[in-house]
Length: 391
Image (tube, rainbow, N blue to C red):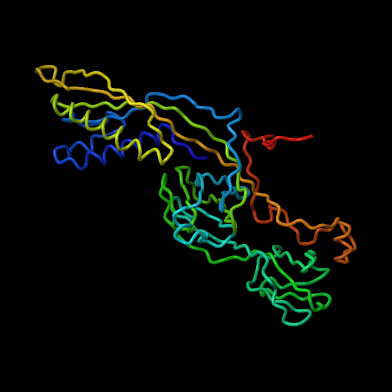
């Protein structure tokens, strides 16, 4: 889930306004007084307060459906774990560009486990597709890596037949050695798909409400505040861009009010005017590339209020109001994808593999064998019919 609503939007504007005024030599004390609340231990000489004014949804479609996301990466849940500490994952376009357009991380499933409230480890389970098996003799083959038991798919080429473990071959997962039941003739060869575990990395420091792009190169990991020791989640990296998730999303139209207060009227007017021109002339273009569109800005009137009830001293106030549009999106991962299509019936495949029971699928495992599970949320129940159906 990705969104920029009241908290994130206000924090972003406070950050930018603080950065702007930090370069003004006459207002160095102002930076600490640019806040979201009137939380001052003593009355300041001047301050800028950013407040949320309200908002409304901008609906782009009837059910908020946007389309199918093609990506190298997506988030997947691990069975019996909420996986809520990782808010969302995205491709790191800069890392891909710097790697000559290739994704910098090997495909596989990367399990992330919270070992402490602020630390996590990453355990990779690499995917290998279409590896040509080295035949040491007509009945013995060797894989490049020891693999995860149960993950091997062995295909006879060039006809593409799936061989069945225990019937057509036996294998030692700890060494990657394959023993064929019958010798291979010339002109035939084997290719294998399997998964093998890599070395664990960590501990990595988790900063709530920050994104990390270095732990898994090419992947942006956005962490939230729902962090709990022992929680787990998985990030799936694919060998090429494939349909990774369904996107539901839209926009929000929000309003922000920015109050200016100062002890003298000249400072109040200067703070007000400089901030208005910075937001409308500079910040507007910068935030547009982030999906934050400043649609309108209006200037309010000036006012004053007593600074000291016993003396003739005042605070001088002014207000500006912004209308801003922001994006929101929810990605529902497509965790089960088609790997290969064989032009055979189940009975024909069983006959070729010499199976006594053609309904026995051998070493074909369900998705749950990796601990992954389909994305489940009441909001998306019965929402599989996204496309038009031609009858």
